[in-house]
Image (cartoon, rainbow, N blue to C red; front, side, top):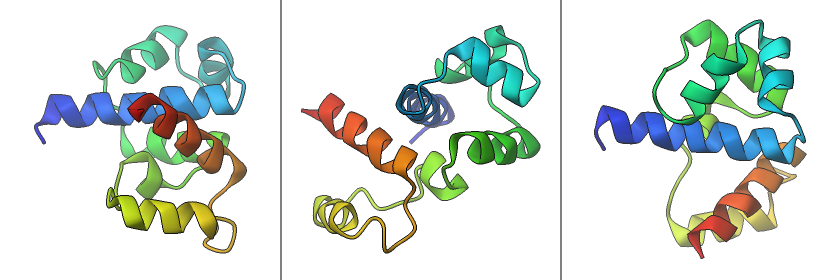
Length: 107
């Protein structure tokens, strides 16, 4: 995966989990101390976040950096298993809702 594709994938995950958390771009920007324009550009894959911003974003959206950066398995069998035991593995409600939305996008 090239850098632009990775930025877009991360941006899509941010957008999906932001929607799952029922936050607007403006509300998320206020919580992070950045501009709504920056949130928009990040969600579009145009402006990467730095490590501190990723940490803050994960806290605000209640997701893990691994999930946000797509470091979880893309294996369909693994995803099915993760969905079944998500709570036991520490997946948050936002992560589960976001994963459901991502799954719906894939269909």
